[in-house]
Image 1 (cartoon, rainbow, N blue to C red):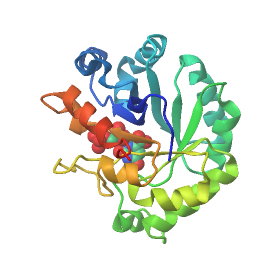
Image 2: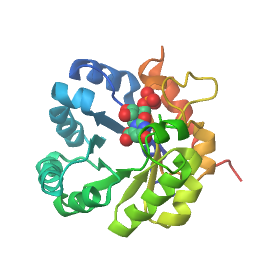
Image 3: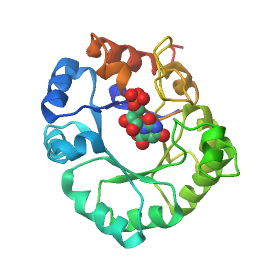
Image 4: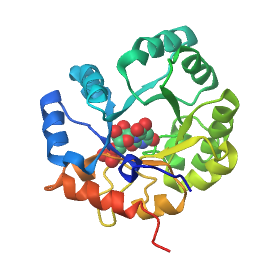
Length: 234
Ligand SMILES: O=C(O)c1cc(=O)[nH]c(=O)n1[C@@H]1O[C@H](COP(=O)(O)O)[C@@H](O)[C@H]1O
């Protein structure tokens, strides 16, 4: 079971918002209930990279979710270009060339996460995209390739986490989006589990966006998710 000095670090709040001002307002409302924020390309293209550096300076942890995938040279230099922002995590798609290039380009302190199969995909979506393997098999194959490349962490759905843990070993991070508190709207997510199921599957970090960004009381939702991620008292 992952051992975190600060249990709040296990929740990563996805700042999928249109502007830095709205992201700042949400961070203020959440207050000390969260310590880790994800900036994807929606906010990244709207000033989010400067916000990432600012949050890191303020002592918050930042997950830069750029999901890079390109020829090796472009990935390597792109990763190098964002390595000094102070982020903790950066995503690339789990293609062997891409993962190896990202690891060459990253600076000290930045961990590269490989996105296996997006949590909005089920078997039919994978088939439509031209893959012969069911999603679970594709995740397992990409997790093995990620481990072979020496990646720092793997992004998958909580449903595949135990299988990925067996493939990737105890020290690689497992990060799972597609997390919904019981009863919450799934939106476009197809491979979904609750924070409690994620805890039981030995997941290191969960990523949660809309259930928090769209909540009347985002701080309370963040606190409830952190509490649900805690191991039960003996
Ligand atoms: O890399 C990611 O963070 C990611 C991978 C994946 O397979 N599925 C996935 O939903 N995500 C991201 O996780 C967040 C989930 O947001 P919500 O569905 O609103 O909780 C979004 O920012 C997605 O871009």
